[in-house]
Image (cartoon, rainbow, N blue to C red):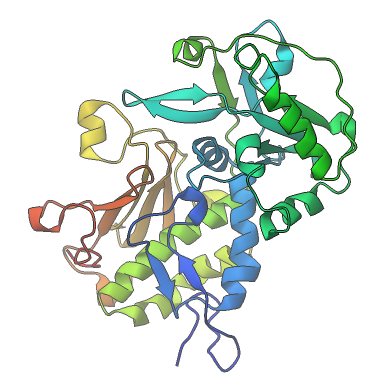
Length: 369
């Protein structure tokens, strides 16, 4: 009998068929993706978690950074500008170009800002906007689901909502711009080009010296629920790997699960029990004074409580309280942790056992090490 670890309903009441990713796809895909099969019902996965993750992607510090890296090679970027206000300053005289969405790339092991030809369309939500990557959108089949979905989202967009940013001097025949105008019209927008401006953007790293991207850190209940869900998902995956799935239904975890589902409200500092910090988790990060440009999830027994630490793309570290330790797992050696590298698409166990290290290892997802 399948029973959802979150809502507690069994397969006589709800259906099971979808896979719940331990690490949401917005944070990247990995070889040997960790998924929970038969543990999370379709309703919790699709109706509760998917909308939460969409908001996390479009309106949180980490979500916007993930879109800057564009891990999934998406053709569109969405920014709500609700809880989080993204600010871009390219250090140029013309402020118009600060409306471009800054993408990131790695060169010589350093993150650099990368300009990608794009179309910015305002009016998404209240104060947000949508960025279309010209080279990717123009390759989409016109009768395909992705293109038609974008067209539907933009059905009410007006000409003055549109700004087109393409290469200038490098494209004297203005092919990029002409293609972009044609694309906007294919999407159903009666676009009329306005004022044109041009400025150089070197893109070789020297721009990095003058360009800044900033975003306010705001943690609301919805983003805290996603962070807590990732922590509990990881714990659940380890519990299943240890053949201790029954522990996931222990009443000590009822409160955190009700919070994740949005059934109860709690002060955020009761979930994320310390102020988020940029202090590194890993020994290698501390010794080399760098941050891993990936994601880290760990859990441990801290004074009789199950504590998880979660960090995305080398940004803030969140300390999440999942619940009081059940006696069944309150043993020496309890705990685990993994690093997720979205660039190499690998998952690395955080362990001192050499035989358990490295990507592709499946034997180190245990509650007790």
